[in-house]
Length: 583
Image 1 (spheres, rainbow, N blue to C red):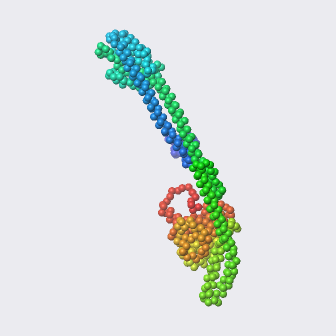
Image 2 (image 1 turned 90 degrees about the vertical axis):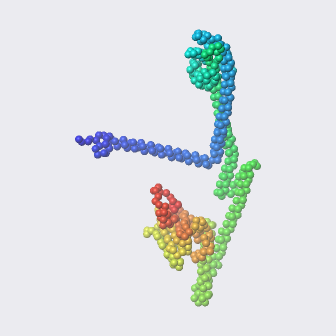
Image 3 (image 1 turned 135 degrees about the horizontal axis):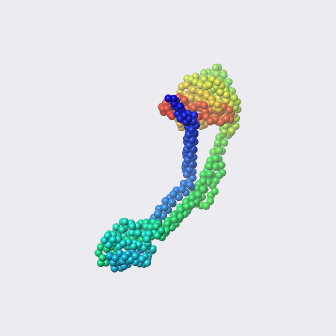
């Protein structure tokens, strides 16, 4: 028999028919929409929770108000419960005592009424019980309205009389009936139907009525005192206590918020004023009102601000004086240095005609004048940066050629130190709008430092570029840098080891000038180092002048160390691409 695939079913080849596919795709869309709604709800919930947590953590007034409200609410609830319990117990105690007293008087009355009851006459028994019940009802008492149920037992006979037809002997709790039947007076709270057959809370008091001269006959009387009025009173008291509790909580919270505001507002003003002071507006002060603690705080704050302003003004004056002194001295030394250097050049060129000692002195004079000229140039450059007179002369430059020129200029120094310069750069041109003179100066400083501190190991120079930036790294394998040294390596006149013999420069301004050159380009100059594993400096500049950097084509940490750390840490689960500290 051949199998025929009907619409909406699975055919013989196991494929769904054309009619089933739309339904399946519709179900998938419904599930996808439901998942999207659930995800959106979760995001909104998380956002709301984060916002609430941030508001809670950032607002002292909110925290104090909330804590005050919680504490006040707990105290009010506890006091209200205790107070309501005391009122309820006292009200019921008074009601119960009046009911017991009234029932005792009723028992005496019932005893006098049933003493002459005819045992065998049913009509006499019923009339006597009815008359006694009506008499008890008419007597009244301090306990208020009540109903009466009387029971007469003689052998197997039982006669019951009640003040109203909706109240029967069977409506009374069995525990109460058992206690009264045993010959003792008892009371109990229980719901009993009223005239409208509604169950209302009732105080039931039962007692046996002695029957004189009639052994075996028993008479019991039960009094039902409705507690509707007491219940209404308790409801009114409870609602009043609840309303007063809410009002008291709000009142306490209002006081707490007001007091908090009186304290927090001056603190906020102080924080705002301190923020403006930090932004450089040194004339900001707090208003002093009164003579309380907050006024003393404002006075102390203003005194601190005055002291800071005075000290900052003095420091600015000293800094300007230092910058002017450096600039003036550098300019003033330029002319005599040029004259002395010309004379030294003449002596250096004629040193072959001098005695060996004089010739050596001429060489030393020439070398030291060159170092002095480098130091003077650095001081002049720093003074231009301090004065804001440094100008970027950016032109399109082929960075590989810039790197080649620096390497060629530093090759002689590397040869004297027995150091190999290894260059890694792309084969194609890397064109960037930079100031070639400043970039070359940065690279010379970095390569010179690497040669000096590389302990004869190779120095690696790497160039790479991306669509928006170019980066150059200089890596040495020498003594390295500690984390504390890395924080000060760009400070002026700073040396990690002041006693270290220096063969290149020696002014302590090279890296400071390099950092300013990088900033002038809108770029980065960063350092990585570990003691015993060398150091690596990275210069990153935008390809276009004025461009903004968002990342660097080269990692700050050497690639070999990154790979070793990855192997030690083991494989990591895949995750979305993210920006690391190296970028």
